[in-house]
Image 1 (cartoon, helix red, strand yellow):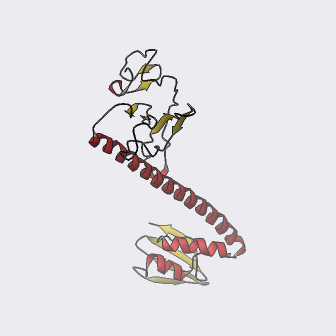
Image 2 (cartoon, rainbow, N blue to C red):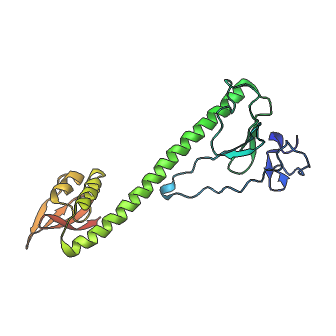
Image 3 (cartoon, helix red, strand yellow):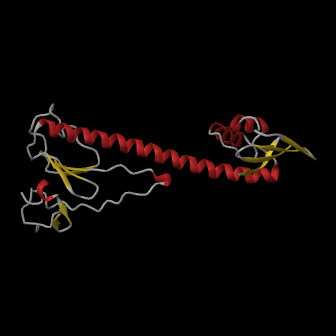
Length: 221
């Protein structure tokens, strides 16, 4: 049973422990797996391990490769005549083979780990999608702010984006004085009136210049 679990799976044209790949090895030498590289994500959100599940349909003899496990994988509720499943980790190492008999406790651990991986993948997807959405909104807000600085018009869309910034305790240009207070609270030191409708708000985080009760600039200390 070369290149099975005891040999740490297939790595290229050899077993992962260096053993030469024979003509017959666990019945799955025909499968060529691509190298999987985990993408980097902003703010160091780690990509969870992605397992690859391989099995062959017993009726059509069609091979299947999936990132999610089939329902019968290490499931005691299914009979043993369901297709054998080979499981590879993100480094293309064979880490489980349902054709290999193991005790019930080990089977349970493998299935629970598979379930946990699926949950982590879903959470990772939600986090990355939220980051992409946030980046898109920030880009859109900057564009609307650049238009506001020329026209002085605050659209409904811009008001919504500014309100979302307030909810995140962030302060940016074009906010009203009321929104600044909602985001950062009352000024920590004092409010200094300046001529021509200008006002300076001083906070521990920095200072804000308002013109006609709208934020014109933000300086973070």
